Image (cartoon, rainbow, N blue to C red; front, side):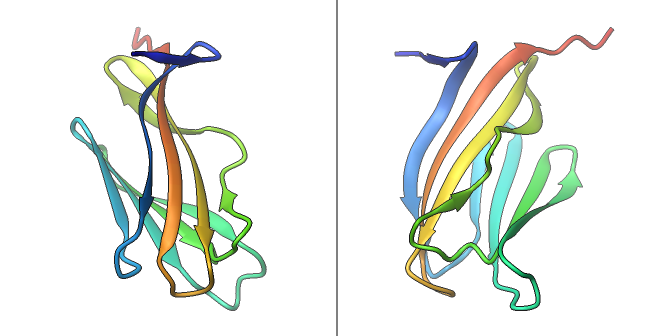
Length: 117
């Protein structure tokens, strides 16, 4: 059953709980998207940093993501392309405190077509 939201197709969606506070790797076809949770007391609030490992692998560093009310991106993250279409990610992270396992809600979307001409 395809789910369509604002001309995008949901290709993967779910909820997970991290295991021993380890990074979470999403494998979508040949792409690897990894959420890494870091606590840094010198950073005020929370932030997201991106680290491109290769053309097929991306680390998303989530800094100080340890709030019970949830933290995540405010706009869909454009990750690249898949099947000739833009690939997007939305996620929310909930935690009971620093260095504790987190609950993650996530959705990956395929958007508009990509033209390489």
